[in-house]
Length: 436
Image (cartoon, rainbow, N blue to C red; front, top):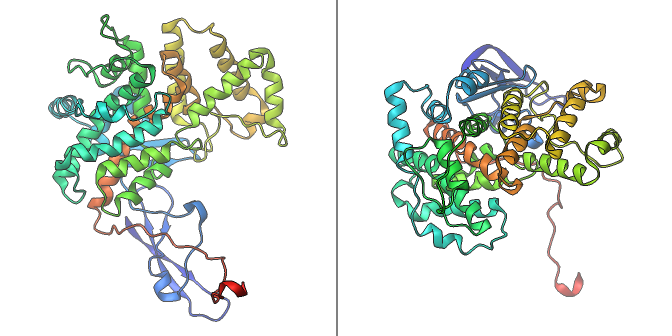
């Protein structure tokens, strides 16, 4: 960050002395006012619920411009990465700052591929869960438990430990997600296969059985790889901030990522694509496409309490750049699988058409977002709705690790300690129980 020649002056109407605050410029994006000395000089804090106007860190990984509908990983537009790169190239970029050359990619892919197996005792750990447990409940436990199996990579202050923990987490997340799925449906676990791609290996572990060979469709494989790329990182969102805050205490990388998994579970965050599919299924049960007008009417009625899930975005005030890419992938997958006439997918496409053309939605910029399309793609592939958020966690793991490693390497990093505006009782005296 670069100091600006301009300074901010904070003045008070009660006669308290004013103070000058430095302003910093990033490479792109809004300038930030440095308030680190505010409390020391004035005894006052700032108040910013949800941190909507607060830069919590200095980062060089991901940049979002919500007004322009722009998403950059290390300076590269997401549109270019999703078309020209695969997920493990994107992982290399997020972790190390640059896209790999041929030799670097081969080395990185080889390292990830040869860490995909998990300790065999993890199978016994899984059996402690009920079969009908939500996959995110299982994943929170499994990811946290990795620290009990891999003691040689739990020191967050050791660069070598952080490096091997990063590779292990990226490699083992598909294995853990597929194990959680297989356990829930009562099928045997399928071990990883080293001659398959990252996405192809995941598909095989999810859907193969020992009874017969499993062939991965190239269209489905690429669709899943694109889902991973589009969800790999998204700046300082709730789960990423959770990972950073958790990691700032010095806890091990597996525990910090498990905290991110737990945060992602929330329906307002990672559960959005699950909520979007549940909404479509609700409309389908009520009559499908014929009832869509009635449903849209309820959405427009503020008193109905009915929300349109999978549309609009808190950050993107324009079209979500990931949604355009996922829309193309969605139609490719539906064509590949011959599902365009499936009632649920016909309903989804009808809802998409209304949202893109109806003045109510266009005026409010309630465009279909990445969650809407990725949910449709995953359901078409055969992934159960309850597993959507676990796959989101699988993809976001690399972003969490990159952000965590960046924070630990930052000489200015401190343990996170937000302040508060206290509005409780003033000091008072405890009375004996008989006088209360």
